[in-house]
Structures are given as C-alpha cells and as structure tokens.
Image (cartoon, rainbow, N blue to C red; front, side):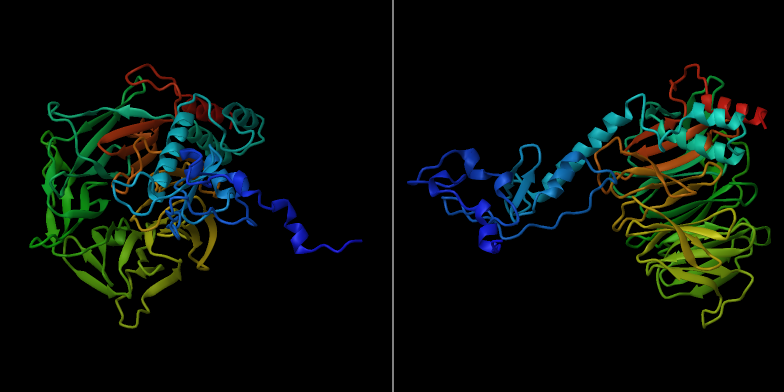
Length: 541
C-alpha cells in the first residue's frame, strides 16, 4: 500500500495558472469590477490562502471587529450558511451570492460597507421575516401535536388533569396571538402621544397601567392608563387627565397598597444637576380629575440614587417599602418614618418582598442574591442575610413565586434561572434571552404557567414556567434600537376580572395588543374560544 503524504493530500487544491485566477489583473488590465471586489466561496477553504491584494495595490484590512451575538434565538437560514463559511479577515461573506466581499475600514457615513451595517441589515431582514410569519393565520404549535381540540378531547376522557389542561391551553393560545394596534383615547384628542414609551407597569388587577414616556427636550412624563373590556370583546384604553413632567430619570416603579390595593405608586427618581434624587409615594387618584376620592398620602423621601424599590404586602409590615442604593438597602415605614439601613458590598439593582413572610430578596450588580428578614435587626457582620447565592453577572430582576421557596433571577449575561431558596441551587434555566448591559425586567404569570422577558435585541420571548420550553418569540413592530426596547404587560384578565387575556406591548409611541382570540376585531363582536374551552373543562370535572 502506498504511503500517504501531506503533499499528495494537497494535490486536489493545486492552484490554477496565473491566467485563470479570479480577481487577478494581467498586463495592467482589470477583468471586471465584479471579479475585482468579489471572491468565489468555492475557492476559499481552510487549506487555501486568503484572497490576494488587488492589482491597484490596495491592501485588505488586516482584521475586522468581532461579530456580536445574534439578536434572535432562532437565526435565519442565511445567517446559518454565513456562519458555515470560513471567516476571512477584512471580508464579508454574502450567503445569497455565495461570495466574499471586501469590507472597508472605518465607521463614518462615507463608508458604504462596514461590518456593523451588514449586521444591522441582517438583523432587520430577520425581523421582517419573523413579522411576516407572525401575520399568518396559522402558526407553528409550541409543542409537537399540541392543539386545543386534542387537549379538550383528552380532558373530557379524563386523560389530562385540570391544572395540566389549563397550562397547555395557555401555551396554545400564546403561540397563536396576533398583533393589533390600540388607539389610546384621551380628553385632549388634538394632542396625540408623540413621546416614546419607556416603562409600563400594570397593577395587580390589570385594570390600570402606569406609564413613563421620554420627552424630546429631556426628562420624562408619567401618568396612568385605564383599561376596560366591552361586552362585545374589544379592549379600550383611556389616558388619565393629569400627566406629570420631571427633568429627572425614573429608575424603578412599583404599585403600593397604602389605603387599599394599588392605591399608590412608588417612584425612584434619579437626581440631575442641582435637582436631588428622591423616592416619591404618589396616590393614583392624583392623575385623574374625575376621581372624587381624596388624593390621600402624598410624600417624598430624600433618598438619592435609588436603583430599585419594592412594596411589602405582608400584614406585619403593610406600610413598609424598600429601596436599593449603591452598597445600601433602606427599609422605611411610610407612616412613621422608621428607617433601617443595611450595608452591602455592591449596588442593589433589583428587589421584591415575599408575601407570607416579611422577607426582602435583593439582586446586586456583583451577581449576588440575598434575602433580609425584617423581623431581625441590622448587624454589622451581615449575619442578617437569611440566604445568599450568586449568578455570573449583574442581576437585573428578581421574582418570588407563590410558593416562596423558589425565586426567578435574570442577569446581564441573558441568563434566567429558577432557584430553590432552601438549598440555594438553580433547578431550571430558561434559554434564549439576550442581554449584555441593559436593565431589563422579567414577568411571571404563575396561574398561566408562563414566563416573559424582553431582550436587548427587542424580541419578546415566552417560556413555559414548568419546564423552560421556549414557546414564542415576538419581534418588535419597529426596528431594533437601544432606546426602543418594548415594555410589556401580560394577563389573562386585561381590563379587570372580566377582562380579556393577552399581551400588551408599548414600543416607540404606539401601543399594541396581542389577544388570545385569533378573530379579534376592534369594536366587533367576539367569540372567545379560550373561555369556552375552560368552561367545557369545568363542566366535565
């Protein structure tokens, strides 16, 4: 048997004659502009040389900036084929034309082709493709063989427990939601909303949503939108009369139950120039002239540079709120003014109270997550930390589940983990979320068994809370940008106890509604097959 040598292994890749080389010039003549700038993908393999310099002696750049992560969890076929091609310094591979094209250095407007522009173009192409797929009446099921008719049949035959049936029905419905633009009614119809939404936060009944909009000349404005669902099945939105403006930035918001559930709103305002920061407790009735109730407690606390806030609903501390600051946690009674201060080793970016016990969970910039039991006094040795565990990056959001033995945490690496607080170990991970440096919340809906999060790539993703399965990825209606990240509210009862199930999305200056009902028409007669399915399930118990 003849011994193989590396020279013979290279024979199939032997170069052609100089007269047959693509992109080369001969006798100071160019074959064509296309052959000068483009290189065939078939001639670029791991064993071949990189493309040579052009005959005009213009060298290719020595390197190109590294590519950023894909903005969507499901990449397009073109991006897959692009990643399969070997990456050559200073060249971009176009999968459609199956060729390499020279990249030009720099980032100025005179440069017709840079890697950042190409990546943005690819992301926008992928977004438009996903929007076109979302507009189709029939969508892919979140799980193989999963549909409403089959689930109802199994439920009637007693093959599917009630709680599993309700959870799977929600999964089917969220996979079929379609986008509808909602008109925001206002007493001043001559002045439509032209300011971009930045944050929307719904109350516990999802009858009201507190909104924060960025103002063009700086600062922001905030107010309350009221939701109602008609007997015909349409969702109506009305902005309250009074809007308040501030030149300070709103860092965090939560609803507060002072006189009755969600009677107030707690705001963390960051100081600007000579205006100091503060934490304000505002009555919700302050935003409406038609509300006959008294404004109630209105107070402002001189707490500067607060990153996060939370309100306690435990009966022992029902007038208590907390704020997370730089290396400190402040717990204050809104009525008596009694204050407790806890010193920590990092900035506290996320907070939430448990309900059954007065325990505050905190997420830090260092990645640490720890809890504080309010029944214990502060100690200098930090022994007041009831439990503590870590993630790999800065924590952006924490959510305590109803069981209160489990906690969800998201960080700036895009990781979302479900922790068992008793053993301080993660028991579930929800993959696909994208975040690098943004301060982004997560949303949990335990009765529906759903987890939602909006990524820095402006995609809204929904997971099954039970097993971490990615159910749906919803693209933004507008091109992705760091200042146009959507803010969402999800509920099975938008508008109150007899409300409509679906997702509310605020992006730019528009408001969108994603209903469960696929036949939804604004102001039209509706037929909610979701309630029909659940009622049928109840009748067969």
